[in-house]
Length: 390
Image (cartoon, rainbow, N blue to C red; front, side, top):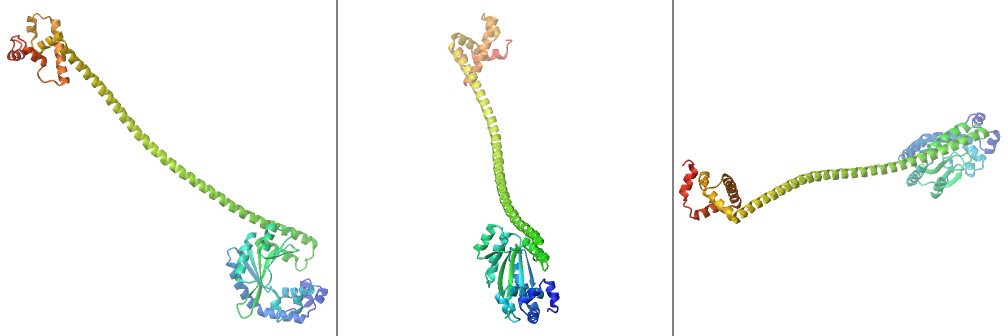
């Protein structure tokens, strides 16, 4: 309720001329304000419900709401009537809640500029706007952002103060009475600038040039902060992709290293097996060499055997050796000691030759000697060989 009109106009920087141009009585204005005060509790419940619904959107950082303050409602009605807005010229306590669309105001805040599109889809999925969706931009904003607003059927409007926000006018009906609400979607940086701008400008510095100049600079900084926020977010995504690729390459390298280790281990085992095979081959070569030497020795003995059998002189000597005659008897036959030594050697060679060639136990040369008519029988041979003194 407005009890002191002069004090009210002073607080809200409304001149007498502005009041007169608004052409509304204080009583009519108070009736509207009284009705609004009576509905405040009901409006609060509707705002809380709306805020809870909007907070469920994953891209929403936070949600704020407010019920329009009575003095700000009165100021809005006066300024709209001053500006000649037609619907406000017929406002009263019965229709004000339908004409003033921001009695319930809900602000949806998000971190990154591009997230507005997900929130936009969420809102349209639950409510049908009563009016066209308005996207307020600052002159010089990114063309890509403006284009995204236009592509999604938003009415783009450049705000003279650099205000940025997307406005939806919707209605909710928790009871039989319909409640019109305004949803404002903006980034946290846009919200910070808007709050500071409103706190500094109103009600006394709305047209202060120096203050407006620095608030405009502040607005540009807030816009740049939004762009920087989007940039670092996109940079994070690129880094994640890059690190994922690095991790993939490392995993591939580890896989290759594991295979290399397996192959190295297999080669090492094969090397050990090869070493064993080489040793076996060396042993085989030694055996072959020994076999060759043995075969050569055997060949030499066979040659000696053939030589002995084919030589008539040696055959006669072998006959004598085969008979086992003693040295004394041979000396009696007139053989010299050197001749006897040669006969002993040939007799030994003849014996070895028979062993190697697999001859029988009896000497073929000795048998040949028995066939000679020399008057020596086997019994005397055995006697002489056992007793050399007789």
